[in-house]
Length: 91
Image 1 (cartoon, helix red, strand yellow):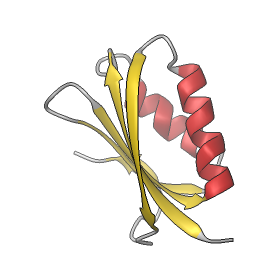
Image 2: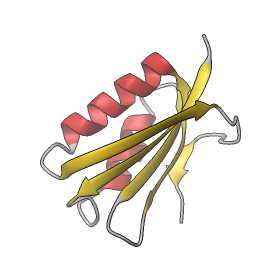
Image 3: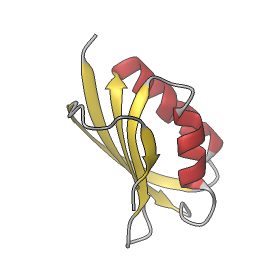
Image 4: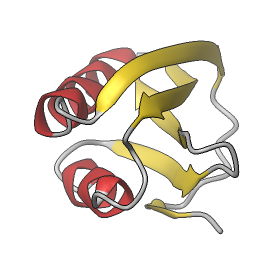
């Protein structure tokens, strides 16, 4: 299956609530790579690569776990860059 990249921006009360830790912990259960980081404007950016089904499953579980904190999200899809060896926090 084709690999893709998704850049997801989460808004709400998403900083200071363990969002990055939760994303990293959940990502280890799926065949995805990428990064998660806090943005200066209070949002969290999640760049995730893998097969569409794996990305969807990962994001669904992240949304479910962090549902009380996410108010909005936006997504962009692009071809996979292949540059991420794993999934972790970007600074």
